[in-house]
Image (tube, rainbow, N blue to C red; front, side, top):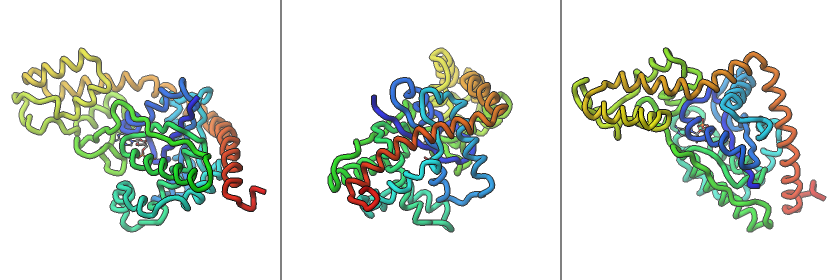
Length: 328
Ligand code: ADP
């Protein structure tokens, strides 16, 4: 059975882009593979943060992941810093990662631009611990959004150069994308992202707040008045209908929009209904977990124990290959 690994930063509440681009696959894959999912708090320190809020953010992220359907009976869910082997392997991988390869990473360029006062070496090194996260469990499949494909290619190169230099330990991992690997934000232009403020938090998917947010969503810009026909194929609202609505709804939108039979408000209203339905189970499970907060901590502790056992085996093998003092 193949192993699957994916991680997510404890960056506050999840948004629709995270769910559609990645977490949807986390849930789908747990029936077929050995799945290991991680809240990556070590990565989160490369950005400014409130120390006092960190553990609450980690717990909230884990709670959201569980509410979306990751099942601790089927998958391992844990927090990165509970398994310190992640950092040891990251250091070792640094020795087989090309500086030039890291320089090509577009995420480093984007993140440095978004936090010019804190361009730390950790931001630059980021893909190396990310490769360690995955390969510590010898994972072959990594469910992520399209923005992570470049980092996955780097992880593959790291595994290859490690195996070449010290002997085969690691498999070659690959990204597993969903049907919609890049979700655009409310602006309809940039990738949906919390840092850009163009996102729909999953916690806002209730009738009123969602309708308010969708009200801001940019539609076909050529459709200026209600009387103008629109083109669903260039409208971000329609791309959301393709994810959340039935074929009948989509046909209704296409017909109504192209003939000016319906307005954007009608189209967004139907989308809001479908999204609220889609996330009904999530809201229910979330409320239940919120009522039993100790349950999340228990799941994370049990997950860390299982993850650590695997990680320690890999590290023992790695130290041996490297001829480190500790491996004797
Ligand atoms: P991280 O820095 O941990 O990757 P993000 O919150 O940026 O944190 O992303 C978490 C996951 O969600 C990643 O797999 C990422 O590829 C995916 N993701 C984030 N934003 C989007 C988006 N707009 N469309 C598709 N996938 C996304």
